[in-house]
Amino acid sequence: MHPYIKTWNNIIMNGSFDNTYKMAWAKAIVELSLAHKASNTDKLVIFDFSQISELFIKYYWNQTIYFDLIQGSNVKKIPEILSATKALISTYFNAKGDCLPERFEKIDFNAAGLNENYELCLKKAANTLKQDVCYRFKKVGGEDFAIYELDLKNRQVILTNDQANLLADHAEILFQIINYRWTQMLETFNHSPRISMKVRSIDENKIRRSNLSSFHKYLDLEFSDGKRYCFHCGQEIAPSDLSVDHVIPWSFMFSDDIWNLVYCHKSENSSKSNSSPTEEMINKLEARNNNLLAKYEASGLKLDKKYDELKLAIEKDYVRKFWVAAKG
Image (cartoon, rainbow, N blue to C red):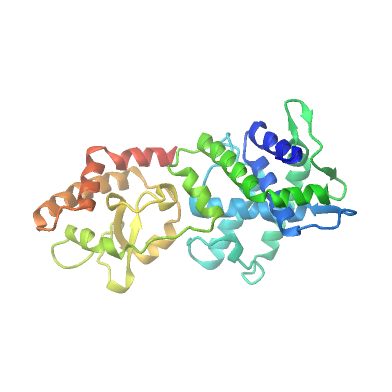
């Protein structure tokens, strides 16, 4: 491995951290180098903080809007760039009238009338990068590694073409190292399960919400009059307004489990976003699961994998355990 890439590896793996800024910074510079594909060795490669800020927001937007991952050690003081990104997400949800997640790459902030909000978010991110991240990243164990130059007055990162080409040529392995280290940090800050799967699915653009219609025949067992009722409000649900909801948010679980799925109105599902359920809802879900298991056993249906999952969840108290973890 080239000494320059070894230095990057050393910084990524051994640098101190109290949030994930350094990993986002490293990932952004590698991504920009890959996109640049420099070839003229007589010129320097310059990346503006505004370019890096846009990638920061992309990373935090996608990890937040789908999984609401904590990015720092102090839960009472959210990292400023993450806080600005969360505010932008909230404004975006209000503008479109629901809380259904959307990848950053698909958002047209100008068309949504949110260009000023987006520009403000970029400005806050760039200020933070200048004040803190840009120079701290390359310092490890008291040594300041010369992996790039900084022009703080013009808010620029400066690399030689050779350096940018090396980052581009080794981008695949560097992304793997960065994501591995980022995952380690997230596992320190979060109680959420499947952290590595979440990071990988975002990076590979493989987040797919499954069609939950296959659960209908199981959830229908709860009702004996041929109608379906909302778990949240108790009212009958018209077929055209039927939705299946994850009581403990999918963003935390990253899976579809019969013991965590209930019927509700579409509007209630789209408005609850990543909010953690109340203890009243958890008590209600536990009672529902016991009732559903009894109905399952009396139904004559084959006691298949879904039955085993439901029974195990009750025996192992999954509802309360995962709810407590989600709250943490």
